[in-house]
Length: 509
Image (cartoon, rainbow, N blue to C red; front, side, top):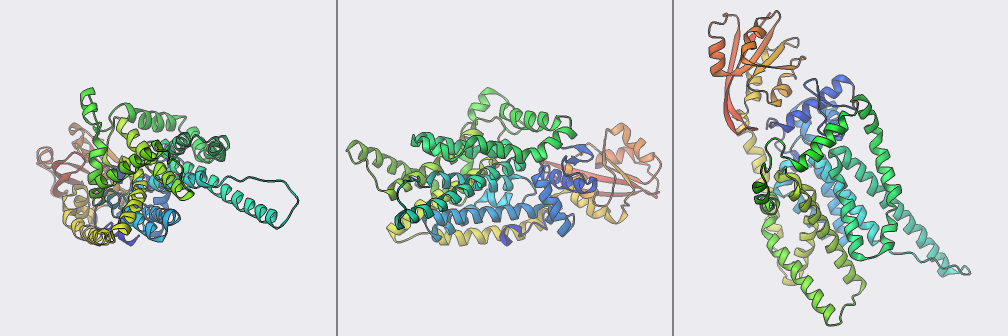
């Protein structure tokens, strides 16, 4: 976890998602309403509440600051690595667990999102936990109960049945609870493990496997847990949480681009179909350099299996079947996630992050086997070099680029002049970072204005300030009173990728 929190205190929150999450969590505390989130006093129905709850707890411990907003993501990433470690250890020993956890932790996309005040790492945690539980349910041995006169063998069998039954209950409960918590983190996308399990059962052609999941009762459990929050949320918002949260941000995101992320035309949609199969080489760096090798290895093993089957050597021992099941399950889960987001119109590189734990396990398993066969491996050197580079970036880069964040810099310059009862507004710059930083000192909410109303706003009674582009400030307030204060800064509007010059014009009482 120390690796993930390095540098999170020195980089300002990045527009637009980080400040939205951070501010919504602060307003939850202010309102005392932990059901429906608000941002800048307006309903924020984009995401379910689990991330806001985690950030609210973090604020209670560390205060309302950038570090506290990001700390829950670091926790979620560390817990995900622990899940991968234990799962990997059960698949192939302690070394496999370590390799898989390290691969996941040191991949570029994990490095970024474990330090981000967003919901993605919580989604990854619970999707990974559900995938693990689903695999454990599938590979549990079938229990054959024989009714006979009790003897020592029968007593042992009865004891074994009780043990297996308790294991079944544990993994079954974990599977459906993880699905519920994943939904509370980021919505229905968290139910991808259901597809992974379903496809694995179909490939196995074994109806007994399906019965282990008791799907009807499990889905009822998941719905019941989600409903503890969902029903009050729907009542308070008169159904808007479903209409906007599911209708717009799930269904709408699938069939149309959101905030310009994706394809706006059929031709561009077709052109972007390989998007995630290309960006994975950046997102999964440095381990992506091994992906072509992994693909060739899996392909060769598949060809060998087909040849053996044709030659009449289809039988395999339990160990061989177990290895085949592991690969099939992991590949199925990875493929489903990549295919779903490939078909969805809105595209961002991190959408496939829930597949990375499965990819880490798959790569670690085959890389370790190859290392044993060849008596050499570059894994340790790659891991050490990657960790050093990421830590250096986390500690050195944020202080250097902090000056490029205009809202943060403007707040730092004007902080001593701000008063809690001030009203504030902005013109032609409405990024969420303004709300997050200035509301740490000012209790009111940001009022977006057009340029005609800026002078009217600042001339109204009471202390107040307005933030606007510097050229506009020089035009509208060229003859401002001498007792007004101005603060100016230059930076980069990261959300739009444009340079911006901002001025804050402040009128005291």
